[in-house]
Length: 237
Image (cartoon, rainbow, N blue to C red; front, side, top):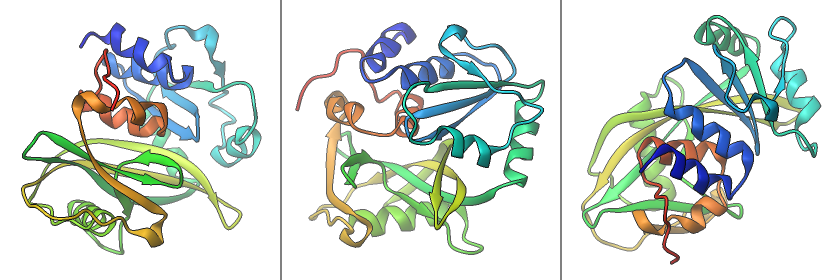
């Protein structure tokens, strides 16, 4: 799939996701932090279509203040912060906020289908918070098995890492999620973890991702793009 066709597909959903995907297609060092449908790009180069963005001052940036100012507000959805070293800047951000580590997976079965969950009225991928001293891969498998009622057969390489912010008990949290490839070769009924707000667990073929693209989180689309699971022509279910 060409980059332009992929970007055009996601642009039909929203401009924030469109732009975030375009940045996956070049090599410059950058990180995306999501606040629901808004995205902050920490980057070493000025983004393409910079006119769509609001620039944030790196010298005075504070993630808590940024969250409070823009979360739930209508209007501007794209922000960028320019820095000589995006990796070092992200480390500084993490030092000054509560960080939660999570892990999850993209599970593929023998039919070439991929496992998705429906949680709190959104399509999502199974993931969850790591327990104390838990290894990332171990936690990723545990969360997938708990949320979907399956037994993972194998776990592969890391796909990517995503970042998003939210508020819990009045505190702004930054969640860093590690995503892994997984395989499932068994049979049996999928069982959603209802106590976690999951009401559906379903297998989707690569060409059936249209309903997911229309109703998921931008960070999940990042994962799907990394795996090349989105097509420029999506067939309806």
